[in-house]
Image (cartoon, rainbow, N blue to C red; front, side):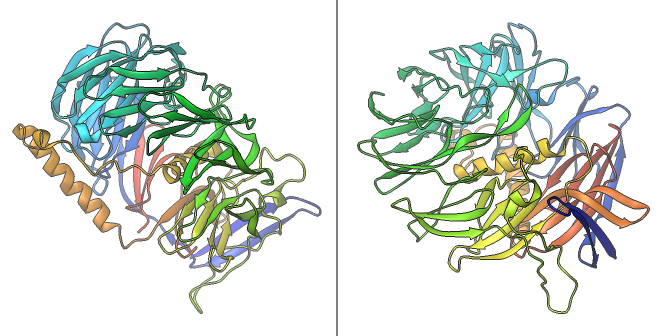
Length: 578
C-alpha cells in the first residue's frame, strides 16, 4: 500500500514536501459498526476496555471486539458525561442523577462496571457533584458536592461512601470557600463547574491533605478538619497551574501562584515560604536535600477554552530545610515540558522549543541537544519509516514570529528501554540520556479538522500529569472487610479482576503506541484526517486509519490497539490497528 503525506514547511522559500511511503503502515481493519437510533451524546473508554455510550435513551456498554451490548441501562436517561465517573482500579461506576441548577438533592448509583447492575444507591448527597476522591486503602470514595452545578465558588460538602455498599461513613463540609472551574465535560448550553482545576489530595495513613484553598488536613476516619492554613491558590483561570502536594518526612510541600511553602505535617504551621518566582509552579519533585519546581508551561485557560503558554519558564531548586533558592534556571525558550529526574544520574531532564536539556545538581547545563527531526530508515531493506527530513531548529522552525501556534514539546516519558520520549501535538522523538543522541524522530502534518489541537493537548496534558505524579490506583480494592461482603460485591470484584488482568497481561508484549491525528492520503480519492499509530519504542509508524471527517469524534485504546469513531452522531465504528 502506498501512502502519501504532505507537509508545508514555513520559513523563507516555503515549500511542500511530498513523501511516498511504501508499506510503511498497516491499514486498520473494521471490527464492527453500530447504528444508534438516537444521537450519541458522549462516549468514554473504561479500564476494562469496554466503551460506554450515552444517549438520551440511556447508557450502553459495548463489547470492544464484537460491538454487542455488554449491558444497557435504559432507566438512566439524558445522563451527561460529567455525571458518570469510573473509580479507576475498581469495578465501580458512579452515576449521579437529578443534577443541575440549585437542586437540593442528588441521587447517586454505584454500578458494577462489568454488568451494569446496581450495587447500591443513595439520595443523601447535597447538590451537584464537583469531585470524586477514591480512598483505596479505606475502601471508600469521598464525593464532593456544591449547592449548584453553575456555581463558581462554594464550600463543598464532603460525603464518604463505602465503595461497594454506598453506606455513609461520614459527612463534612470543606472549611473554606474554593474557586470552581468549568468542567472538562461541561455541555455547550448548560455550564457545569467542578474541582478539575486542582490536583488530587495526597494521603498518608489516616490523613488527607487538600490544596483547594491553601492546605487543609482532614481525618479520613471521621471527616473532621485536623488543621487548615488558607491562602489564595488560584492562578488566573488556568487549570492545574499548581503542583500536587508532596509529603516528605514531617513536612508537606505545596506550590501556589509561584510560591513554594513547607508546612509542618502535624500542625500545618508554615516552616518557610520561598520567594515569588513569578508564575505557576505546576510540578515539584524532591531528591536528597533539594526540592525542585518547574515554572510555567502550557495550561488550559477554561474561560477562553485555549491552551496557553505561561511564562516564566524554567526550573528552581530550593534547600528543603531552609527554603532558600540554591539556583534558578531560566534559559528554557518558548516552551517547557515536565521535568524528569533521571534514574542513576544526578540530572534533571527537560525540553524547551529547541533543545533537550540536562541540568546537574548545581543548575548548570550538563548537556543541550538540538531537537532535530531527521529522515530515518529502519528494518533493513524494508520500507521507509514515516520519519521525514525537516528543517533544523526544532519546533521553532515552523513559524517565524508568533510562538502561540507552534507545536511545542509538552511531555517527557521515561521508557523502560532507557530512552526519554518527548511528545508534542504533532511530533515525537526518542532521546537516549546516556549517549546524548536522538534515537529516532518523526513529525506529522496538522490535520485539516476542527478542534483537533484542543483534544490532542488534553490527552498530552493528562499524560504529563501521570508522569509527574505516580499514584497506584488499582493496587487495593478495599479492606478485607470489603472483599468478604455480599455476593454481588464479590462477583463484581472477581469479574473486574478477570477483565483487568486480561487487558494488561495481553498488552505487555505489544509495546507502547501513540496515536496521532494527522493528514493521510492513500490515493486521490481517499484522503483527509486520520490516525497513525507510532511505536514509541522503535519510532516506526505501524498503523493507520483514515477517518475522512472534518470533525472526528473518537476514542483510542492505545493498549489494545482499537479506535472508536462516531460519525454524524449516529454511527459508531470500531477499528483494529493490531
